[in-house]
Length: 461
Image (cartoon, rainbow, N blue to C red; front, side, top):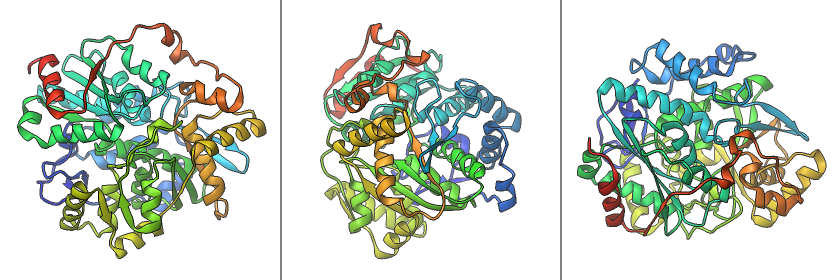
């Protein structure tokens, strides 16, 4: 299996090479040269299997000869042993729909499902190379803590996490800033997630700096994240034994694109529904055909407070017939103007696969309140956005509707209390968190300042 850039101007790479890299040198994102395929019978046979067994079957098709079967099985078993339920991503009934719970890992967010595995494969690849890495993470709330939980204390890795100052929940921030391992470096950036993401992209674009500091990425621009996340679309569909509509709370587009990846591998999916908060660039793009960035608004669902969804480039690449030159032209224009007019053929392809809807903070609170009143279940604000959109957009779905629950409600106690008057019970993973001492640095939205920070703090290779 080889991987190519969405912009078509970089050499192909192996899975191991893509795993420890950032964006491709041409600025694009790596994608499999072709999608591995599963037959209908193979997918049906996933029913009743353990989550780890399905993960092995799916990921084996992506890793090629980068890892042996024994290595992959060992790391999958170790990754999912850290979850507090044996089925990793349980499917629960909620009214006439289903909720796919993705928050049973160490940091109580869906990012753990990919990062607990990715971190182990990443460490294994570095050991094979006799190398080290500086992992750059721009986070809107959950990726940072999941990456820290995976890489803290590792001798050959430094982790630099940028979160937007004042724009994540207290629990999200504390999960990052109370980790005191010497290889963890937390930054509160004086601006939005989009600005943090742009700074990280600029670091990778400076290839001399990126190579000197062995920069690597583990957020969803890393294809290994997509590969690991597509597994739960297979397990949920196998349990239901029919094609479903999946409603996905969406910020950087990685989680919902994992659904497209699964469908391109042979999984029957009725529709993928993009659920956004007030930062609705994706919903607007599907409606109007124009992908236009605005200024990110702070909302009750901060992990979705994103105006530039990096993984949308992957969906656009597929919708454009994998034409790298078209993607290069489109993304260069977007970088200059903040606007991209999607060509009619690509827009039609996107609309065939995706629907979209939005829910503002008032709808989010009302949904949290009604779900609790009707079922006694507390949900976090991101899941609430998806439930609200499901009620509007997916109500006429032919098959079952599956809502992705991406975070535990205890990560957002203020929002849950505001909506329901209830404080969510504190899971064991958060015991004592509020009393721990924080350590982080405030850095301005300035590339030179960020480079200086890294140069002064990261151990030399």
